[in-house]
Structures are given as C-alpha cells and as structure tokens.
Image 1 (tube, helix red, strand yellow):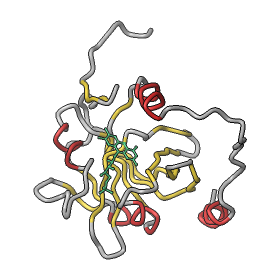
Image 2 (cartoon, rainbow, N blue to C red):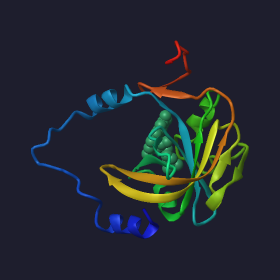
Image 3 (spheres, rainbow, N blue to C red):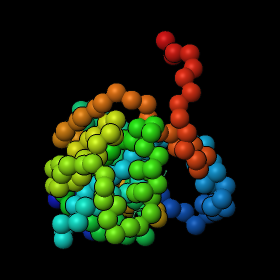
Length: 186
Ligand SMILES: Cc1cc2nc3c(=O)[nH]c(=O)nc-3n(C[C@H](O)[C@H](O)[C@H](O)COP(=O)(O)O)c2cc1C
C-alpha cells in the first residue's frame, strides 16, 4: 500500500470495523490475562520526532506479516505520548531485545526526557535510532497505518535488516523470561 492509500484509510476512519451492538463485552482483566498467555519477544521501536528528539518505546505487539514484500507490524496505544512522533516520521526502526537487555526493556517502557542517554546507538533511516546489542534491527518505512480500537496499527516495509547471534528476551504473563530450550521441532 502506498503512503497516499495509507492516509486515505486514516481519513476514512479505517476499513470496516465489524462492530455490532450485540457483541460481548469482556472484563479487561480477563482479556489481559488471556492475551498475556501468548508469549512474545520484546522490541524497542524507535523514530525521530520533528524537533530532532530521539523517540523509543518498548513494544511486544511486534509481529511479522509478509516476506514478499517484506512487511512487519506493531501497535501503539492511542494515549501513548510517542504516538505523534511515529505518525510524523515516514520511518521507524524495530530493535529486537536480547535476553540480557532487561534494563533496556524497562528504560523504554516509561516516559523519560532522554531514554537514550548513555545507551550505545546510531541513527538509521529517518533518524530512527538503532540500538547496539539488539539481536535483530529492522529499518522500516511506514507502509500503512490502521485504526485498531484503542491502538493504532503500524505496518512497515523493511528496508534494511541486521542480525547478531544471541537469545531473545521473552514476554509472557506480564513478566520477562529467558528461553528454556526443548526438543527441536524436526
Ligand atoms: C514488555 C512490554 C511491552 C509493551 N508493549 C507495548 C505495545 O506493544 N504497544 C504499546 O502501545 N505499549 C506497549 N508497552 C508500553 C509502552 O512501552 C509504554 O507506554 C511507554 O511508556 C511508551 O513510551 P512513551 O511513554 O515515551 O511514549 C509495553 C510495555 C512493556 C513493559
């Protein structure tokens, strides 16, 4: 999808939502518990704000979408202060955290004046910071943005890929974990 199509989706209020007044309403605690049973990795998604400030936030909503073209997605809560910066920049970077980066996860999970202070990083496309030590770093251009209830969904086209060896940090049941290897699939 092109950037023009992307803004059309935004203007139109998004594709059909499928909402129905008869839909069930769930206790948010139940939903949080149920959704939290799905283990994910942990990422820090970054961009640069129009005033040149580096912006980054911890996100577990990252997932892969497509190999051809290479697409990924993540979602951001509408009340998150960083949202304006992500909307304003055509690029962002996904930094997949290594098992030893619990402190990085915590640092980017709360508002702060300068979350990057003392943290080794370099600017990528659109000025989005690339974090040293992240086991996968994806530099992306915004492909589409979709309304997603109390979140906004960003789909990114991957423009650059870097990986280094290392175990991932894992998020499950509201807590951070390390991998416990089991028998191989094959
Ligand atoms: C493990 C973990 C995963 C998170 N995943 C998301 C996410 O996918 N989307 C989101 O909007 N917030 C997520 N958050 C919360 C944000 O990191 C948090 O709101 C942060 O303060 C946002 O940055 P800002 O306040 O500087 O805008 C997550 C927090 C943690 C600890």
